[in-house]
Image (cartoon, rainbow, N blue to C red; front, side, top):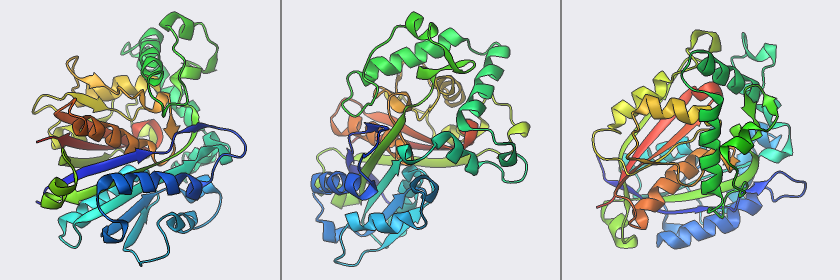
Length: 352
């Protein structure tokens, strides 16, 4: 296996939904410029480009082709795309480097969630025969999951509010957060339900955003980055899309991905979890065996900014940043996709 590292990462400053926010290309151009320049690798020398986005979010076919304009028309590039969060594009780029065909790659993801009704759009990812025709939206399904855990005695609404309050506190210090106002647990519990037992801050904000990451192999990574974030393990697992066949209070796919990646084999300084709903952090922490000695999602995560199709990549990017700045030696970035934590990807990073 080739040694591959994250050498740079950049985010568009996430925006709350509103009319007139930038489109994908406008978000990507400055973000990509920042990430590529920070990588120390000339743009024309990057061997592979891979993106993650969704035509359903954009509302038009082949929208990702238009986003390639952000890279530039010349010279010709080696390019690919996944209709997923860009964390899965990162996995493809990592595999591409492992083949030896290229020594570097740029990965990017973007989504303009405010362009439509996100809760309805996300229904299209459900099983097309048995679940999608019922019309459940993403928040309602998460509410069913949260209620199942409460009824089973695995967590309480106060436990959920504690997660949300901690995320808001972290978001207040994060310039890329769209929620930057702290709330106490009691204040959160006093709010009305959005979909019982979920309140506003148990759910992610509608967010327009983008993120870009540059990878490099071996000596190239060491030449361009003073402290590369080496990818030591990469795992992805999937649960069935049949909601009725799942125990919603646990996540087998997250547990298996974490075990295969060796998450708990050594001390874990930081775990950036992609948990769009407050109770999902509780599920993930239990499934992955993350203890009190690990700093969990210090960026605030998806509860303070959840740009669709770059939110997962941003969790890995935030984990890499802690390696880059020397404040952590071993971190984990996690991404999820699908309803109720259906798909889970784990990336373990280490500094030298």
